[in-house]
Length: 508
Image (cartoon, rainbow, N blue to C red; front, side, top):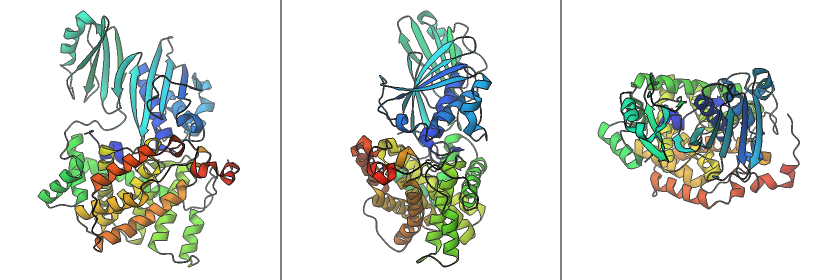
């Protein structure tokens, strides 16, 4: 099973929208590239696979801006990110984007980076964005690797006769796992994953690459894996899903629970800020949609909608968070940017309508994270692989578990509510109109937030779910793999090819 962190891989990153795969993922690939190069490049050529999902939408989803910002060394939340391409030349960075048939196109988000350092040294990287902002560098100058930004990683190339002595030197560093070796002719590549930055490198090194972490380092071990073990742990500890998830995360990252809660609190603050900020008047236009969440919320408050109530307010708040996301505002991927409205809509409703405390809201997020943990272990958050069901569908499942936690339900009930939400969204396609995370993403986020309350009520009221969370997630992944590429982010099917959708004018 994959070693999944809730803070690293499920609820986060905190980022600028609109897409975790294509904006945050691009930023993280660029950040790893800059780190491996040893600083800011003077020239960068970014090549997307012609048949992949980056090619048709990298401009609309800000991939080009994110790559540029990362290579410039800016934070992903920096206010200058929308201007990165304009500011790059003045900062000494020439950057170009191309599409081509890539030889290793084993993933829809495959990309090549060719970087040139100030001294003229060049470096070739191949990588992929695998969903929710997570990335993998799989090749560095011809060497096959697997770098995810989860640790301080040292790549050391030596001659074959020096390999054993160099490995012994690396063994003195704070390793997270034993040093690995691979050979190519007379050369050997040593890979060391470290808990702390390396203070020294082998004296016989011919080439050294350093990759700095993008996230918390996983210093510990998992308390459980999968739904069955998670529920068994909760039962043994007589606790709910939230407490089990918190204990898991603290153990995996090797931090105390107070630090883990503080990190979750930062994510909560961003979520509440996006849901509330998106209701404010005077928001900038998005690319296709005008902001309407504020008017929907006001109409509900004034009794001008058909039914109204908590579900409608949650839906409006979810749309509000997506307004912020699509204006390249700061959001928290939950689990992706395309689904970054669902949990904020639910949590803000619990905060404002039910007056939950910050501590209680953080607990609901841990419960949501526990469900996301199962999805990340068994499947993916990448719509490029599994369609909308693994993004907004997953967010709805996580939100339903959060509502059950809020209501005092058991860990089993929270998992059942998540499973039912998934069962109701199974097969949903990702058909971005004009390649932009707006239509139908905004209304799908809204409906998922509203549905989380309904499904939680069904389970808390006595519905007995016959197909558990693990099996449901497996079925969701299997269905996603059956979807043709036209229905997985490429904007070549579904609503994206409707004449009226194609004819929509750009507002900004």
